[in-house]
Amino acid sequence: MAMDLRLHERIDEIPAAAWDGLHDGANPFVAHAFLSGLEQQGCLRPRWGWTPRHASLWQDGQLVAAAPAYLKGNSHGEFVFDHAWANAYARYGQAYFPKWLVAVPYSPVTGPRLLAHDPAHRLALARALVDRAGRDGLSSVHVNFHGEDESAAFGGPWLAREDVQFHWRNRGWRDFDDFLAALQPKKRKNLRQERDKVRRAGYRFRTVHGDEASDDDLARMHGFYCRTFADYGNHPALSLDFFRHLARTMPRQVVIFLADAGDEAVAGAFCLRGGDRLYGRYWGSSEAVPAPGLHFETCYYQGIDYCLREGLQVFEPGAQGEHKIARGFLPVTTRSHHWLADPAFASAIADWCAQEREGTAGYRASILAHGPYRDADPTTAAAG
Image (cartoon, rainbow, N blue to C red; front, side):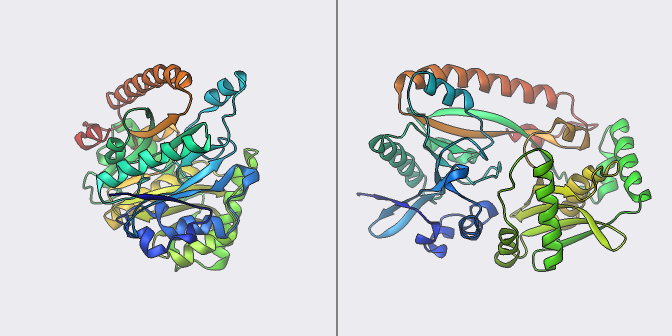
């Protein structure tokens, strides 16, 4: 039966109920409210490299699949880096940009990308993306941080890439002390010392959900986020109005950890909650030199405590950071798939991708062999 691929310059062209009906709601980053907020609140601009070009697949007038997609003028905000590919295209006089990216902007978080309940519809959408990109003369299509269950939709000309993030997984611990008891003695001692330093410095911590956060809480958290980006010489793309939008439209999925000194919040971590997971996204402090351990307490230990209280199974604190290993986070594999229009480039890059996957697998295995726990975690070993 014939299917019709449609493209959209705004996600609001697709009804929220229809979009959200294509996924189970466990991942907040693909929610219509999250994606529409990015567009409505000025977080996506063509001069920053983001132009919405969402894809939807229709059958007999019914929406059966969709993908959050963007024309990209650069590789900023993707976290699956392809600068070498862009440079290679440029050396041979070909245009790599704009490329077509299926992803959630500024969010290196694994989740659904080809939204559909029927695997056949996912496969049809993946094929339709390639066909349309080829007809439009685009250099490539990229699907970043997709779920492992979506891998089957990518065959034939698609190239696979893998990377590693560090996640915390709940083994059924009763509380933080129970979690500490599972660590190797030296790691356990170091964590206790870090937490003690923060307590002795006089910080008090608050956990507020979106519907509990005052406008001052949101403004301070946004200020912390902006300062972190400024400290690293980067532009903070997310606006305060976007934070307010999330607190209003996803009130119980927004989770903010605030560190108070006296009557004032001086540091914070902005997280989202979905399904059985907590996702750490942004951290910052108003202090030029945060107290020892404040970053780890705010970003990691408060999140672990929250997961233990709430019965959440996984805490994903964000991309990169081998320092997370000593604090109970272990490596898991992240996945992306890529289609390149030029067969010669695709053939050359295929070998590079294979070597990259082999190196990533070896890196992950070596870390798991020397993890922070007294006993191996079979659930993490299986979460490749």
